[in-house]
Image (cartoon, rainbow, N blue to C red; front, side):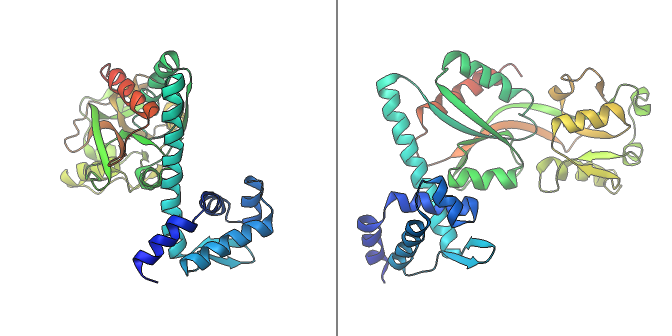
Length: 309
């Protein structure tokens, strides 16, 4: 089948319920659970998938006793199905906005730098100004959040902007800059020392961000520039509550944005200059499409709240 023939079939034979079904099956990896979510009988769900496979002349799922998984063709169709459904959701929100005022739902992905301060303050401001807008927050790292942003599962990502900006299909807007500091409990042995050396830092137990993060690469560069290997005795965590607890009750240390330290009176920042580690916090969203009124309004609130930092 040629590309033009396939396009014709998709335009005139593709059904939205098939797209919703594909996304649900991908989520549950089980046709029965997907059909239950959509209030559809399982035989009807199976037939819808087979009809779509016949239409496309490719197999969309691999079936096994443990469930179903998308094929390469299935992953492509599911990716575009999510974007189409996201556009339909945005259309309904814009129509409602025109008739009732700004309303809608925003799915926010957040990174460590924004989670404890910028996100809560911006949501509180949003709730005060536009109570009809609801927000869902997902915390994670760039390697998990950016693919979800591209497929429409997330509307925007807020946090430290990566060193190597992802340009294709995404717009990244810096909101504010702040230094990265080494954080310890106030009674930590290094807290009594002016300008601790990197050798002293390397001898400590560390809480490190995951390897795929910009901050992890920047920290490793700091140690290598000092002629040392990066810390070995470490755990990996991006959980603010977990990190606060570990640092407050042990001699573990971590690198965090400066404003995060002020959230816990038991913590303090060491007088260590980090030359490679910087923190530009910003918002990332998909390019090439109009933002929904709710998302556009929230970005304006982020800009306003960020000025406080």
